[in-house]
Image 1 (cartoon, rainbow, N blue to C red):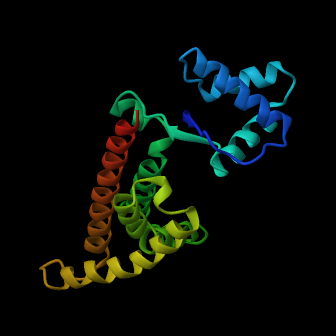
Image 2 (cartoon, one colour):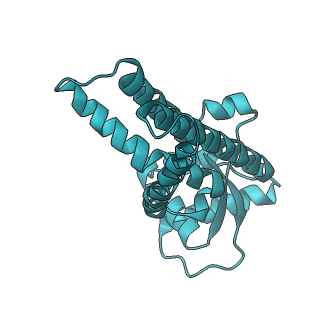
Length: 208
């Protein structure tokens, strides 16, 4: 969720009547020393006869062209943050990791067709989750990387992290076996994603 940060003093010529109406509404609210929320802008434009879809699309284009600046609204506390869409990456990693541990180590599924689930989860767990957790920890701001860059770097860093974990395990009594590798990658991924979650929460709090 985002809120309006400011309306630019200089912006290109506006041809859209909807955008003109949004700018006029924002300026009217600023005269009253009120910073309008996205919800209030949408409600005002809808009451003027525009559709919600058109209003949201216009706001998005205004942000892209620099007419307005929007900032994300941080949840009030960490518990609320964990229940918000901001923490979806945390729950994704936790659920994928727990599912892999259950299927691979606890139940030890090896029979077809259930073994297909094991292959799919194992591939995601090894080739994506470790790198994704590291990326979310290092680049916790959404604007740092786009989705495609995050996806590509997650795979690349996973290919770098997994051999390093195996190298470390090779010099321990545990050795390179399925249970130690699975547990080690799980612990590493969880630590990294929790670190990224905390960093992102603190960053969002500084914006509010």
